[in-house]
Length: 188
Image 1 (tube, helix red, strand yellow):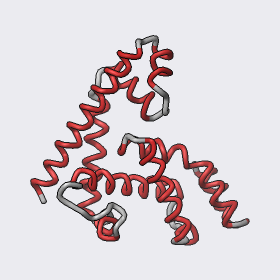
Image 2 (cartoon, rainbow, N blue to C red; image 1 turned 120 degrees about the vertical axis):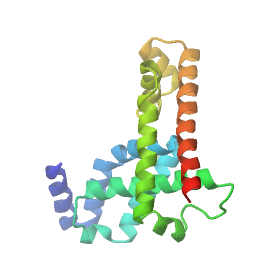
Image 3 (cartoon, helix red, strand yellow; image 1 turned 30 degrees about the horizontal axis):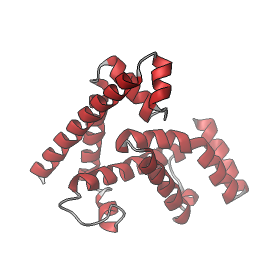
């Protein structure tokens, strides 16, 4: 990882465009997979990662980076995803958009970071508690971006079985997210 950081810093030293190209090529796919763990839709995960890169570019954050690009980008994607999930859970009560400055500044306070970490852990636990085959189907779908038909072929399952596993996995994840949302509302 240190070699990648050195490579990216050298690319930024040569030109800002080359630095961003190297950063994007190296981290887009892993960041996309990271975001997908939280939001479970490819489109929203893509939006989150692109927004993070856009903000990183516009704010010139790259010029004053103290830590690693990797740690900054992963934290930014995680925070943006948590803000989005939190907004979705409170959508009926809250009419403010997830991109508003109120939500973004709220996402950086210690209490929110703890809540985000708790949500992340709950989601991770929910995935790990799925039956092995169900977990495998979910991971192939959400983390590797495979279609149900591809998964069925790869795992030698019927399409209906894959669909049933996905329905079960998504149901379990909704329950985990709902449980944390109830806790957050109770403590708020």
